[in-house]
Image 1: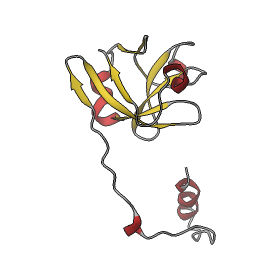
Image 2: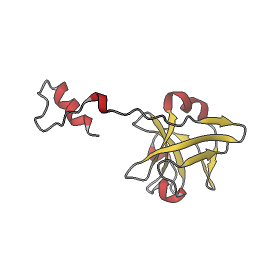
Image 3: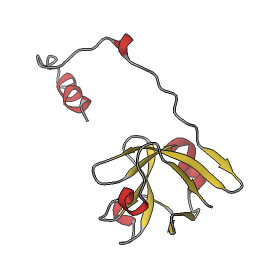
Length: 130
């Protein structure tokens, strides 16, 4: 996270670091992200990001989807998973859906890469059968 050190310094009433690169907010580009769709055949969403552990960050906002998926058994790539409270709650050799620090739901594997298990990466479509 590139903003955490700056946030910590500002919270401690320090000056902005001299080596902090400023940018023109007008240069920021807004991208349209695909919207998840719930169908009778399942939930269709997309992988936004793969972190360095191999967790797959989805375009499923926690606030909108966590309650709807609580207790639901989902299937993807021959794996069954449920929404779990934290990574260690995923049984070894299994996948789980966890609430990530970015406010999105993530597919994670216990002590392994979910991306490698499923062969998925950023931009890939994910369809959960429910």
